[in-house]
Length: 453
Image (cartoon, rainbow, N blue to C red):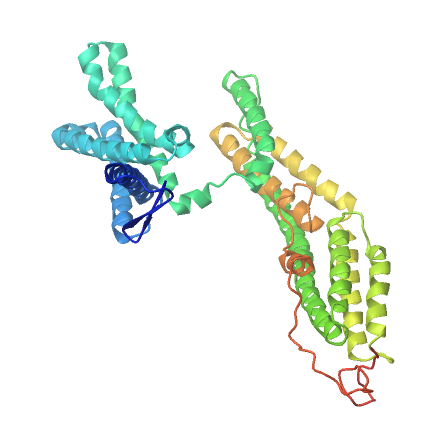
């Protein structure tokens, strides 16, 4: 027998049962239904608690997050005061100690609540931000328990205790949860990710030179700072000029593709009005061919000869003499030819090679002859900015799928147009025509689009 609940009433289907068995069946079904509802409510509550901390979406959750961020800053500030202003810390030691316990308790509640309500505790625990949350509380408990385990008057134990207390500065990493810092320190698919191997290479080189400087085996104090500043400024101008040129080309082709998609859509509407379905077929075929040619780094405008001929045949069947549709077709061909030929016009190879070689040579000179911390910082920032600019120009110059595949023009309008499952536009609804009338857009002869069924 099958039991189904409808609007709070239990309906039975199948063979009839004696009353006691029927009641027991209904009780069993009711227990299963209530258990399922309880589990669903529990899952919903857990998700709400998890989202309250992970994805705040109401004023209360935002307020709690603001309090947590304030406690992070206070905790880091108290750690700095303890080590930089020991007199002030000793004077208010009781306040700072109790405040640290409060901060530790708040961070613990936050971490435990998120861990307990996570859909997958294992996956949550190994997330980078979850590891940061754990590191924000674990050293605090070690610092509290350490005096009960070892004698903190010993030098080694005292150093360990001070290190655990100083580890509170790691809590500053919790600020990475803020959307601003999440975007600021984004790594995947960025220029930083592309140039990171070069940055590491020059940092290692500078580290070797710095070690030699420290032991007196390398030249020092050559006073080349001003020379490096002038060369770096000139190199930055050259790279910025290339960025401006390639970006102008990038935007020009992107805008042309948008206009081309709009013209194709209009042409499809007109042809479909006269010959239903034919406009969709020829314009989609032409758009697909143009997309393939644009995304092929070696293709030129010659790849569009056959698609252009097929599209013109469809236009020619509607116009005995070139008119409005012929003008639209000519604009399409002109725009496509511009995009495909402009795509192939890359920065001259000798100029591009000179820029790359000058950038690498300049960064190597910074690592070799700019001493100390100034040299290390100059290598780090110079490599990111200058070599990052070179990477940027390479992708902008290639338009689609560049050398480092970080930047491509937006082809979404044209891609949506050529999708086969897209419903063809029927903005111009065909109306019944009197028999014998030409199937053009206008009954007049001159300047109209003439055709036949």
